[in-house]
Image 1 (cartoon, rainbow, N blue to C red):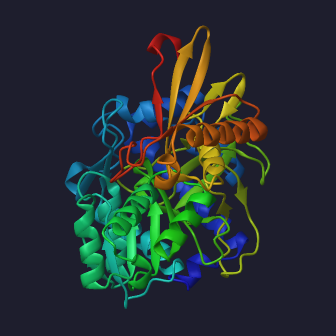
Image 2: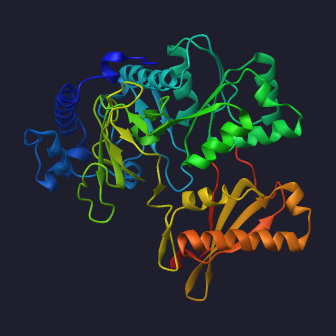
Image 3: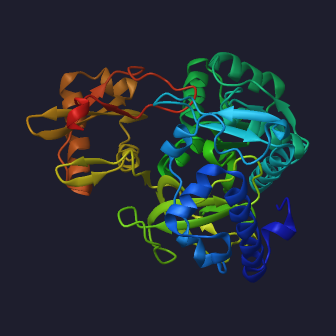
Length: 435
């Protein structure tokens, strides 16, 4: 299904013409309205009139997360604050929070992008949407609420947490759509099994998950445990929240809302553009955002772009599921390791649960990776000899596929804290000066 046929099936030529027009408007506006960008453009020796082709976007300077923190709270705002109607922010757990002001038009654009996401997942006004993303400063809850309301769904704003109540509401209200992080979807599935409620017998039929990286094996695990179609929503607080890209029925890459976001892939070391189809760091420039436009924002997400015919009929470029993040990458024995790689391998082991944690410690001069993963109840209770057997099996599988030696700890069920939002997958215990 299509929400906005004109925008989602535009010819590449028409789309790129629109993108260039909006890019030139945005660059001119931030040059005039945002001192930060005026200074950055001067340092780069670039003027708005230098943008004559889409490829000229590569002449513009990057924006990075520290820029947003340095300009906290509203140094990047491009409109008078009287035009701001809402402000969201990140958690700020690693420093000052990232703020996101919105004009009324921005909220309309956001709702439009999220409506496309819902519609591509097969959601209609007949659905009951249980929104288990956190409401508040985090963009997830209210972003999904906007889109579902525009599609005219009945929205149940449960927010995150209180898992037993989530399941009871799902059962009593007949929810047909679940929105939350993928790790919380697994928490819900696990708790429902403990409550002797078979979610597969409920009306629930589709989930839209995002806010954290998740692998295809994780998608398959969620679909099997909940008996639903697991769809994806991709976005960032820095770009306005979820709705930047979304799954369609083909589940073969995420369509980027290209009339709102210009995407690039660059080499994560040289920062030079790479050819279409090659893997690298994803860069976004917002094209219609009013309150806080972003110029060449470095997401640190590793993926690739593909422009190809899709069975759904959309012509919007696709991005692969995020492979990993440059700031999540670990270097173990000289090998680049992403948590998503470990996750995919663990989900191939039938004796374990999809609950894991990676602990990085210093062992002499080398970094040591410890993989903690929960054993299934019957496996863990089979005794130490069985646990050692499974630990060796997992370590051998990781060694054979990735070429690195890891220590594996098969831990008891429920050892790893369950997530109500983004899951904590990596615990770095190395002294900060040695990381």
